[in-house]
Image (cartoon, rainbow, N blue to C red; front, side):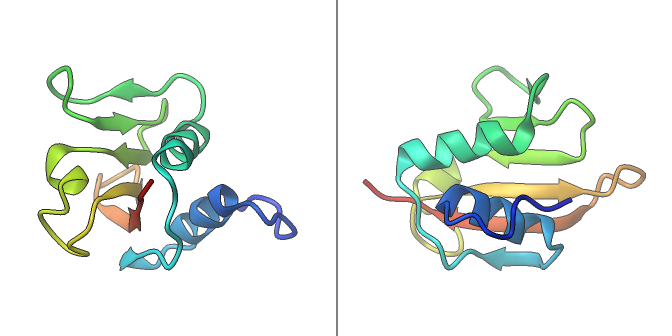
Length: 108
């Protein structure tokens, strides 16, 4: 499932590259914090829910196959790519393992 190939939107670009199944990678696109949150909402769709403790920053789509993560380690740039970022992930519905994990840098 891909969004319009003709879209010039950075948000759609990040979602499309996540859906491409590249495994574990860092996006070449840098979003603003507002764009990152808007992209997360669009990526997850209706009915998403927070996973784990309240405030965990880990959200799954209603069907459990998509994940948007804004945890403290990512926000602080504590791991690769070493800058503040959010995660967009696609999971195998049978195994729960990542098919794609996109690290998307953001700045304001």
